[in-house]
Length: 491
Image (cartoon, rainbow, N blue to C red; front, side, top):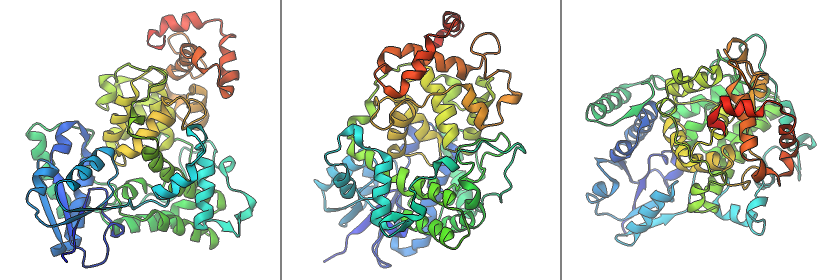
């Protein structure tokens, strides 16, 4: 019997996705992916570099095809195929269709700590509004015996969030080693030349070109992980929600991109952090916060993408229909005078990345306040971030960031005024706007936007017990009419 060739997608690039050293592999570089919509130049570079580095590692075991579409490439392959479940609904439908036309063995998903079957068992009987991440996270910790002492969490606590919410230090920087960076090679040089050729042929990219900053091979990814655990993890937790104008990386791990390319096994990443805690090399708050991100939030989002169904992406409970402005779509920081927003857009433009607080409380917050279309925003995040994939961004943006699912993923909208940004960053001191003002020429667009959002959705949110105090604050505003007159986009 001929062993099927393992067809790997571009985010299934680690050893986790093959079965043994003699597994033959098929990789397909589909040029139409980048031709359909504008992708960040550095994201396109990273994906192609990672695929080609994997092909080079596999040598004669790998057939690497470049074609306009997957179907066009597959017409050149007449052997049986095996496919690990892909990470998007669209790719899954393609595989399902192909399985009706040719010999395709379909395998369960890999690359996540909690599989779909385990998640379904956990979720069964809870209902859509009881799929709480904290409950899921504790269940996963227990099942995999991570940071546990018998049946109880170490030190008797599951959650150290309270210790992980410090504002940034007044010095304007963290006393922490910088991230590990890869060195580009001849593969990267060829990728850059090919992308230049695509751009000359009419393919549109956004953002700036390299250098490549994220791991594109398993060896690089392991080096980046080891460096983070040894040098940066100890300081990660305290300031994970803070922002600094002069330090976009702070103590964050930068593991999301290699994890989402399949270059690292998430449980091994978790174990590395756990070992640092056991050895006394990193405090529990930092380690627990990192573990929560990797085997908690990441797996929770992955599983919700499938569990909530294909139509979840279209939810729009708040009726947000405003198109994204050109300056935002094109990553043009000059489109706004708000320092925090301009900084966040600059970070995405320059490196295709910003950590979770600029994503949620600057970019997403601003969009939600102005009623920008959540589906368009989801696509923007997907294509503009090096770690952005459909499964990542649909629940994160539709649910977490924009509250378009009406509370399935989050119990209240993540909307906040300038005071939050002022507390958790050093942006506001040099900004032309005053976070304390909601009207007048120096009114902070986030502060004005916060009250405009609450006013616009007062009736819809009135039944949410977590919003009661905020909504009552509207009745104390003497200048609400002036605010809406000055900011017609908030009506």
